[in-house]
Image 1 (spheres, rainbow, N blue to C red):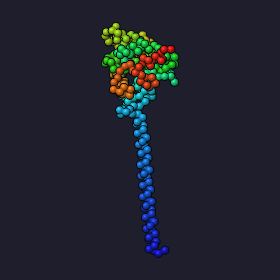
Image 2: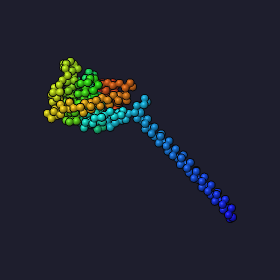
Image 3: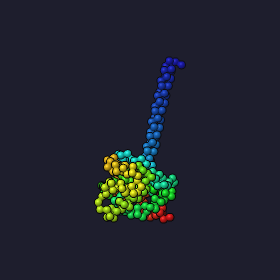
Image 4: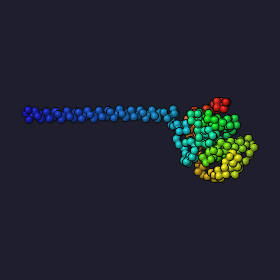
Length: 272
């Protein structure tokens, strides 16, 4: 092979090498583009699963309910659910559950007359169903009706559930019968003092130590902040089950499904 032929061959080899390199780069770009398209599709699907048609993103929490964001700035008390709920299983100790049983969530306000009617008609029967293992009952005290007793109701229920869980059911019932109901019925015309509230809690079974702690909690800014956080989370979550995003009590869920006709929904667990 002459020198000129060798030069031509070398030049041709370089051309082929350059063409192959260019082809490889083009293949890599195409492959990366395809991969990115797949990733984008996956992300879109995931987002769609957690987004309502109106653009509000909701996530199913460990408590079995849908939540929009996280409104909690104060620490959630020990033993309560991630949304501030108080669960009851066999034995009616706060923080327990009945595995495999339907979950009944009830949002209520001490100053809500319909909540009082619900408690009158179903409260004792729902507690009995939870104690029998037929349901997991989850109470959610919220403060939307007034600025005094409603937030105090959240603090009372949440403090007792966290600090003395074995006394929760008795205190909850005592507070309904001797405080909330009597105010709503007009038997009590003035807001009770902290001392009077603590006295009612003790009638429901709260210990002296628990009573002292409750009195302190009712004057603690941290607990007041927690009560406000619960209200904000309740309001944020309402768009997942109310088209207009309004809030109201009582609000009932069964296994995470909102039940607008709560009376008939609860009857299935109490008419036994």
